[in-house]
Amino acid sequence: MEAQRRRTRQAPIDMQPEEFRALGYQLIDRITAFMTALPQKPVATDKSPAELRTLLGEMTLPEHGQDPASLLNRAADLLFDHSVHLAHPHFWGYIAGTPAPIGSLGDLLAAAVNPNVGGWMLSPMATEIEAQTIRWLGELIGYGTNCSGVLVSGGNMANFVPFLAARKAKTPWPVREGGLVAGEGRRLRVYASDQTHTWLQKAADLFGLGTDSIRWLPTDDQLRLDPTALRRQLEADSAKGDIPFLVIGTAGSTGVGAIDPLPEIAAICREYDLWFHVDGAYGAAAGVLGPDAPPELAALPEADSIALDPHKWLYVPLEAGAVLVRDANRLVDAFAYHPEYYPDQSDKISYHEYGLQNSRDFRALKVWLALQQVGRQGYRQMIAEDIRLAKTLYHLAETHPELEAFTHSLSITTFRYTPQGLPKGNEAVEDYLNDLNKALVEQFHTSPDAFLSNAVINGKYVMRMCIVNFRTSIEDIEALPDIVVAMGRQMDGRLRPDDLCGKEQAQ
Ligand SMILES: *Cc1c(COP(=O)(O)O)cnc(C)c1O
Image 1: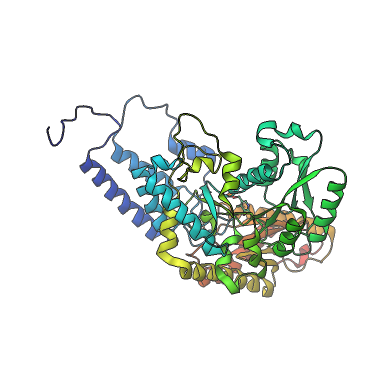
Image 2 (image 1 turned 60 degrees about the horizontal axis):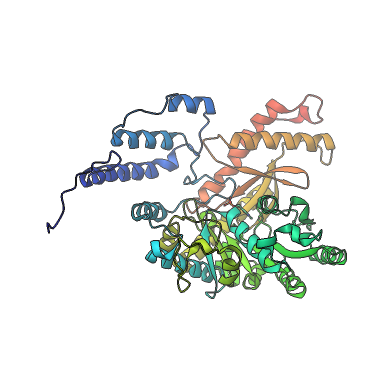
């Protein structure tokens, strides 16, 4: 036999090794230059959809193939110059982590090897790496290593999977076969605070319960779920024959980073035999702080399941969400089928039995690499620094005559611009401040200087800064109040109605 058979097929999509190497080096050189220049570049683009389409060109699908080198170069140009840059030191909008460079390289490696992490058979090493990653995530946040789980696309999916596991585990009839109608009018009920992320509506809708099955519970003045209201609602629903099955505690709300009283919720779930799920998509990562973590996180080990987004506060590139569960069987019970076309490999992990996906990418690799590059100490340092910076901004806003500080929790700070000389507590003034701050936030979505988002707190529209950004430093935070105030004065000059009191005192 010849050592190497002559290969006759020439697929147009294939690349010769020399070409691949040359293109790869070129691309890495360009990415490196881009990352080096990024802090001096605008954080966002101010181009309209129409302008971007013009740049793209209104062409039809190419009939014939094109040179890959120029395609890659053009793609890089388009993206480097017309993106909102999550890797920029001044990106503080929503809860979107700055991508770790090792994660970008990990994604390249994962895509090159391309294991299908749906079944062990197609991804032996990748499956074991994902299992180790899941255990490490549990260890990192204080959930413990005796946990299982699965990586998913992000927080929404990381909450959907436990929602379905809870539905299967706690419904007193065979819900996977009978569906919800088998309940004969008895309604499944899910409990969460009115601050819970909108994934919950999607889940209740998609999985057949309907959004009316959600009991939205009131929150206290710090926007944390009220456990007394939870107990009262559970009693009332059980008394009329409904079936409570799931309680959600949020660890780090999307709005202001509030952490629900998880120990009290855990105790109620034990008492009523309910599934206790923690939506820690953002805030569970702060569990790495151990004794210095917010005290409510000490109850994380009591959760039946936790959602945690490595693409938020673990700084891994999109997409990476994680489901952690105490008992892997609860996932298999909720998701597994055994078609003839898959071999029975019950002694091995097959991730298609752990969730909604069948074919799965190898997103574990970038998480696994990042966890090892910095270790527990590295994450402890970065997360503590993000929290400290958010706190510094709170103090700066508190002491600035034209800013009003609202909240600081975890790495989220909320504040608003309040021009001097406006009377307090006047409804027309409050309406105007809402309009003014809304206009400012919109401007911050296309500003070159900083990217911020918003929250609404007791009817007040405020600016919201979330630091899940290991590139932000104290100088960036100290510069922000002046940027906000300069923009605020301009906007106030433009927007303030003549009949609003205080106009004559405006500067
Ligand atoms: C961001 C977030 C989600 C949704 O996560 P995605 O990754 O955007 O799907 C859910 N819950 C909380 C608390 C979040 O902060």
